[in-house]
Amino acid sequence: MNAKPIIGMNCDYRPARQDAAALSWINAGYYDSVTASGGIPTVIPPLADDDDLRALLETLDGLVLTGCKLDLDAIRLGFDKHPASRSMPPRREDFDRRLCRLAYEMKIPTLAIGAGMQTLNVICGGTLFQHVAEDILKPLCHRDTVENCLRHVIEIVPGTRMDHIYGPGEIRVNSDHHMAVDQVAPVFRVSATAMDGVVEAYESIDEQWWCLGVQFHPESHSASALDMQVFETFMDGVREQATPEILSLEQRRAA
Image (cartoon, rainbow, N blue to C red; front, side, top):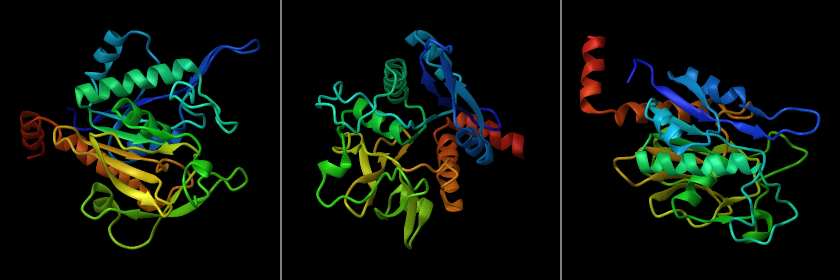
C-alpha cells in the first residue's frame, strides 16, 4: 500500500444515441470525499473482460461502489416492473454486478453507497424491495421529486460501525431512493434502519472483509459534515485490512 490508499470507483454510463457518443461520468462528490479522507481516487471504466477487471482491482487498496439515479432492472430481480422503476443501462448494471462479485471474492475493502449497496446485497445473496412506498407498512418518504435535500432520522444499532461513526444522539441522513434492501445477505448484518424499518446501513460479518453499505449519500452536497466520517472510517478500514508486513513498512517510514 502507498502512503495514501488507492481507491477505485465505478462510474455512471449512458449508451450512445443518435446525437451523442456513449459517455461515462462520476459525480465529483465521490472523488472529493476520497481525497478529503486521505485516499487517492481512480475511476474504473465498465471493462468487458473479467481478467482485465481483476488485474485492475489487484492494484487497488479499496473500492467505493457508487450510487445511481436509475434502478436495477426489476425484471432481472424477478419483479413485474413497477411504473416508478427506471432501469439503468444494461452495460452499467452488468458491469456493477461483476464488480461486486469480484469485490466479494477478492475481499477488497468496500464502501457501497445507494444503488451500489443494493447491488452488492443482491450479489451476496440478499433481496430488494422494488418500491418502498408500496412494499412496506407505513413507509416514510424516501424520495421527494420536489425536495432535493430530503432528510430523515435513522436508528443505529449499538456496537456496529455506524455506532462508531456517529455515536449517540439523533442522526439525520439524506434520502433519494425508492428501491431498498429487503432481506440482508447472509454475509452482512444490519447496522442502521429508518424509523419505518428500511435498512439504511449494513456491514460485513466476515473478519477478513471490511465492508460497509449505506443507503444514503455521504458524498452528496446534501450530506452533513458528520457524514464525512463514513469515508474516514472506510479509509481506516482499508489500512486495517492491509497485511502486517505492509503496516510494519508504513510504520517504519513514519518513524
